Image (cartoon, rainbow, N blue to C red; front, side, top):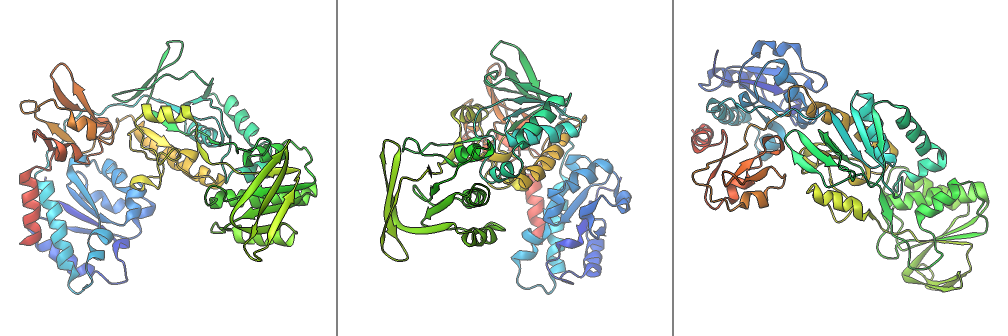
Length: 527
């Protein structure tokens, strides 16, 4: 078998038409002592092209656009062409090469040099002999609100067995509350579908014990001592809204629950925003939806007090204008609003920022003060047990970590809904589809994919200081009390190399990224 790697290049990698002369690049690759051939793909993001059968069982350097990584193109192609993980490397050609050079004339030579450096790395790689851990076939979804139920139903539709841990809290976060106004039975319908699905088991709240990571997943012991093994955990807790200090004032969640129950409101409803900080755009949109509903359906008089009116979400400006046309009064106040309560009768005082005049609002029928949304203590406790990184007390995955929608810093743990910060119902459905794809890949009968460049611990030089265990952000380094060395849980490793960089005894090396491989790759770039 020819050991020279082939190059598969995605035409989308070009940041402008004709930036790369493909014929010239192909000629450079053909002359290379390191590379074998160039295969150019047109729009490969949609499917794995049949034209790649010519490089079956070959070493391959992929050079593509970001969509290929997001869509799992490399892994799918490698599996179809029987290419082991040690025999391919991938580069985002646009971001990692083309965007770094202002002068594009003769860029083909630079591109070829970068591809040759990757080819040199492939020369020195050795196929891994890891026994891929097979993930347990069941998935635990922590959360029984809109996020958790959407995730469970999405997984069940793909044939995956799911246990749903019932939790208490706001069943729908800001951004989803408006959907409950349009369809008050939405959550009940989701629960009914879950109960009828034979692949979904609803577990009572409080049945969880601290999870134990094991090879291939997680071991969860119930309060009764029973143990269940799961291949993945979906972290989808509902957030809770902190109540206002003023006794008798409503939170936004309570207002929606009041309206969803069908009870008439009537009278004057005052909503006080931005009291402890700027109101999030999603919360402001929900306030607009509630105000429109109260005005249109219940003939209530609605006043909204705010310091800022952020209308950055799509459609919010139109909704804001509609509310103003309906007679909903928006008062932009200066600095702060004082709230006095006398036996449940509120009096609000402040300064109108536009007129600099003082205003007084007495005895509204309902006073709404949206509270801060955060994860419940039990949800934070589970996040701690799983060693999930949290952004404050809100999100376990702030912004498409590693360009994978549901990924977290722990292999096998996925974030959904409130745990990601996504709120709109449409976002939940989209992330549910991405979640199903990610978990299907993890539960593959072939086992969990082991990263090629995982650490190798030298037991002779390991000082058993466990620095690597403390610094690993993925919980992949463990202690071996029998051998008194550190060891790698391969199925959890993301091959970041932090353990090797921090090891004071220099007892850890990254597989297939040793000094010989790296030197050869660097020489290819500078020769």
